[in-house]
Image (cartoon, rainbow, N blue to C red):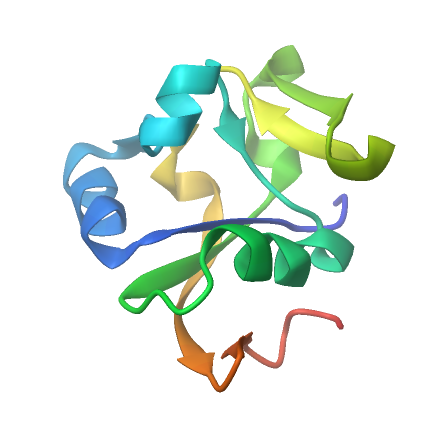
Length: 116
């Protein structure tokens, strides 16, 4: 298995995805035409940049091998880094964990399984 990838989203959106069996993306994902993910090395910066101070979030841990064929693409983004982007819906069965992600001071408190 490849290294896990991560998605931060509001808990309400995750619950809707669970009810539907698929996640079609947050508003920014739908505008951009793909679901934004981060690697372990990128996810803390993603949280700080896009979710600072927000509560009620969930951190999804996703098995990239489960994502449909070539729909998962690694593309340059912030600072030229390659980020995983999913062009299509995410089957909730590909999510191996869903952990609360709450602020802890100026940053968020990440679960122990996410490498620093």
